[in-house]
Structures are given as C-alpha cells and as structure tokens.
Image (cartoon, rainbow over all chains, first blue to last red; front, top):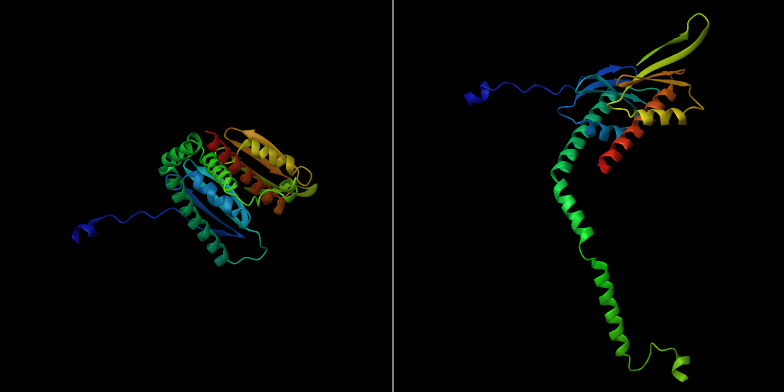
Length: 150
Length: 85
C-alpha cells in the first residue's frame, strides 16, 4: 500500500479544448496517437463537421473541428471533441491490431492465392455426381420425348 | 489560420489564409482540390518549405469545404501508398 502511494501520478494526455466560435481546437500527441489514427478519426468526421489539421510543432497534430451548424452550444462542441477523442482511441487500437496481425493476414492471403483452388475440386465433384445421375436414369426421364421417340 | 481584408481602403474583399503542412496534407491532393474548386473559389497556392501557403478570396463555408476535401484526398493518398508498399 505504501509503495503504491509513493508512485508518481500519471501525466494526463494533452487534449486541451479551446472553445472558440463554432469550433473546438485541441492538440494530439503523435507519440501516443499515430498520424494514421488521426487520419482514421478525421476520415469519419469529415461528413459531420469541418476538419482542419495543423502542425503546431514536431510530433504534435493540431485538430480543429468546426460545426457545420450556424448555432452551436459549448456543450455540443465539447461533445464533438469528446467523440473525436473516443474515435481517435478506437483508431489507435485498430492500427495496433493491424500491425500485430499483419504477419498472419499476409500468411493467410498467400495461402489462399498460392494453394490449389478449392472451387475446381468442387466443380469436378459436381460433374461426377451429374454423370452418375445420368447413368442411373433407367426411365430416361432426362431425355426429351422427341429424342426418345425417334 | 487567419482572416483579413485583402485591399484595405479600396475593396472589402474578405480573405482567408491557411497553411497546409505537407506531413499532413499531400501537395498533389491540394492541387487537385484547387482544380475542383476553381469555379467557385479563387485560391492561390504557394509551396513553401514543408507546407503549402493558401490564400482564399473567401472566408466562408467554401474554405472549410476546401479543407475537408483536401484532407479527404490526402487520407486516400496516404492509404493508397500504404497499400502499395
């Protein structure tokens, strides 16, 4: 218990909301959220609001979200920034998962492309079954009556 | 991202200036966006070191739409390059 009390408090993520007219601005640390994650979140938000990204300094992406609505409250802007931050986290996890499963995905793709096609064996089996069915057609039902009469 | 009047004392033409960092915005995407918006927006793009300096003859919604479009194309370009590599 005493050891835990001596631990330094974790530094908060730098997501400062600067609420201005119809827009909310905050910085994203690229060492925590890769640019790919910022792109992923921005891609989903371009139809909801006006997105403008800046580079205030190296390793930092400035996110400017401006409401498309003429009238917007501070609470709505705060919610917008919060939703963007949640999506940012979602995208960051997606990027990490994509990186960690890249090898197995490549292996599965290679196996799918470079092994014997499954479809051809299914087609061969179906053709074999059709041939067997025709052989067993004693009443020649599958033969048209014009041909059978001739 | 600033806004000022282009010709003080002569004409009240609102103007908007934005810097598009090349580590975020693809210069080709910016040029393509400028071509798409050419009919409705007058924009001057000046390539500087590491960024494109854009001067718009408008400061309204069209400028925001321009930025959204440029970002959209930049993201697509980034994803295309990721897939090809």
